[in-house]
Length: 215
Image 1: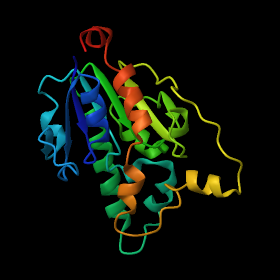
Image 2 (image 1 turned 120 degrees about the horizontal axis):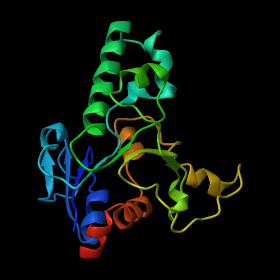
Image 3 (image 1 turned 60 degrees about the vertical axis):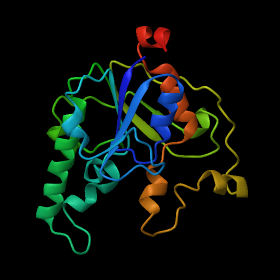
Image 4 (image 1 turned 90 degrees about the vertical axis):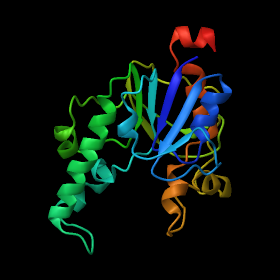
């Protein structure tokens, strides 16, 4: 049985997957748990990194300034923001990623988009992502490219690879629901939620050999 911290997760999807697999799993987020679990800690996950975990899994950390898609805002900020604010947010995001990536935990997985060069230069011990997966590799009919930065863990192996539908079909549109989510206050929640197939694969494949035998 591994002792696992699931950081930056309020949905409980990954926590429940690891618990179902027999692990001592806890989630932590600034928001309360959607499922009301007593195995969820409200607060900054960085304050828990020295508590003797066997594995740390970080999902959708608030690092939007690090990803390639947002690099343009560093020089031409969006309305209501300044260049200085964008640079501050970049440094804050890099510091958060660095804290998780360099945590004193033997096995680490951080979900994050592929970064631009300015972010890479600020990351302490930056390494490129180990893999990019899709929900449909694990039985969930959906498109959502998810990159994992891994330390002490193997890349995930697909468990139930589906066949994507043809483009310009209604089914393809349904598979693209994450990207087609309408603007609104809850759009980020829809886009950040982990699919259950990926969560189950992580819980089965990522604990160490000793933990898998004991689970």
